[in-house]
Amino acid sequence: MNPSATDSGGESLTVHQLLRKLAPDYLRRFGPSMPQRHREVLDRILDCRTSALGGHLFECPACQAVHYRYHSCNDRHCPLCGQTDADQWLRRQQARLLLPVPYFLVTFTVPEALRLFIRSHQQIALDRLFGASAQALQDLARNPRHLGATLGMLGVLHTWSRTLIYHPHIHYLVPGGGLSHDHRQWVTARPNFLLPLRPLGLRYRNLFRQDLEKNHPELLKQVPAKVWKRHWNVDIRPVGSGENALRYLSRYVFKTATSNRPVPLRPNGKIRWTYRESKTGKPTSLVLDGLAWMGRFLQHVLPSGFARVRTFGWLHPAAKVRANRVRALLRQPPLLTPAERQTWNPPLDPDLSPDPQPVQPPTDPVPLRCPRCGQPMRHTASWFAGEPVPPPNRPP
Image (cartoon, rainbow, N blue to C red; front, side, top):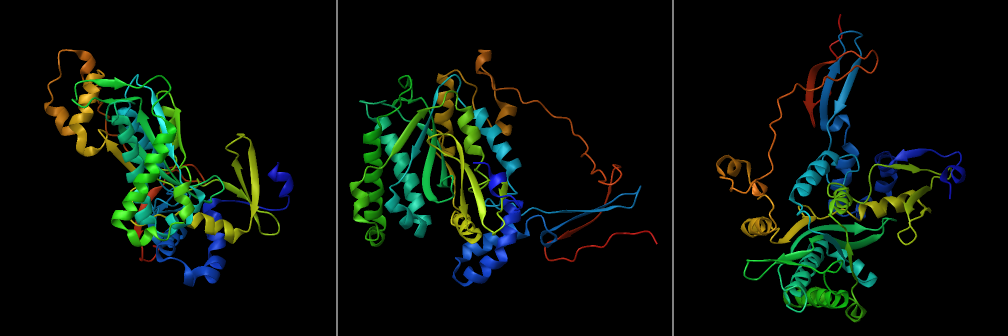
């Protein structure tokens, strides 16, 4: 479907612009009943890159033009922020990939009947999803009938579907093999096969229920009984070297639900949300009331301090010795801190030496160019959130 033809006469706004446009009406209608956490995040997003958060004043000595550059909110739910952090995260994770080990992307979902419960008890329920899914993977991998080894796992939580409905699921990027129980061998998984799906889904469901029974029996009563009779789906796909899967995961490590993409508005005020159908891969769209769309976006706000990205097994930060043991068995350079690099004595085998870290010469920042005449601008003032915006230093 061609949105430009259907939405003729409307406008197109970015996600951030749309949030700013819809926020006054949304707050009037739903403000008193909004969770405090949602209100705090929305306030930060609305202030992002505005004078409210402070910024810098630049002036052009050549033509006296004035330019204000405002601070970002750096909230992980903001569609404007996080790209630099995501790029840096991606580079760090790419440096940790084991080559030429094949990787798998393992995705744990939950039955639809459980989604409302999880959304109502996010801190507890999402923690348990991480714990149950990671433990299920390790339990089956350690079983001698399967792999007979311990896995290393990088997990990333997503709570949304392509239409922004609440759909919690966890993606794990897992190397195709593991560390033997005596830590002396790397055990390679079978080609294009990591673990059996149905036993993994059953173990995942049982661990989640056992955790609630033990630690939160009062919440267990709120879970619909049919949830425990359904199979909990797990998907495992080979993803080659893992680089493309990392790129996919990195898009939303420091963003939530969507990027700051254009959203077509129809003349009647409704929005057309475009997305790619997961089963067919074809682009499609749906029409939503603006406030309904905003509600879908805000339901993905996570509890304060909740860790969306977690590592398990020998990829956990506390298991660095085991991680480097794996790398040694695979003839990979060890992971070293900058301080360790200064004192590390490389082995005779040059293949096991850590990758060189080139020293980048210091460079002066690129000056801001005047949008009017193209000349370098001069930084003349700064201010912080809550302070008045400084006026330009106009010549008398």
